[in-house]
Length: 130
Image 1 (cartoon, rainbow, N blue to C red):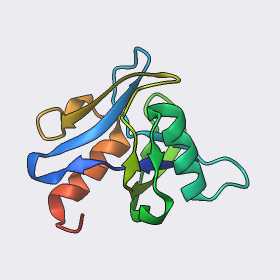
Image 2: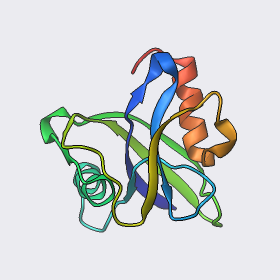
Image 3: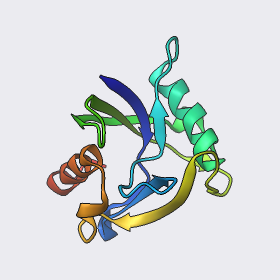
Image 4: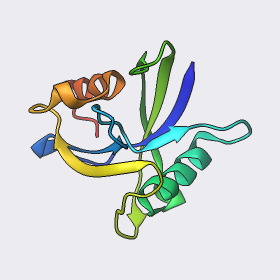
């Protein structure tokens, strides 16, 4: 099981979700990454978002939203995405292994999303708690 902490930055009214693409990967993912041994989910989130997007999350604004699990795209493992909302400072700039970042309309581009991200978007479509 792969456990990841992820940032959910969205405009629900327009069905747009901030997603990233790693190098030349076909699928889009939530920004974030693996929770390392000894880290809390929130610590992993802060570290990963700084590494991937070069922004600083405001720790007091971090709120847990939900957890989704599914098959990890391209792997034999399952993945658990611990999804958080948070305010941040700085301008989003892709760094590290991130080749592209954008707000993607999840209803119009569902086939581009990794399975667990698509599952999260279905959660958005069935709830108003965002």
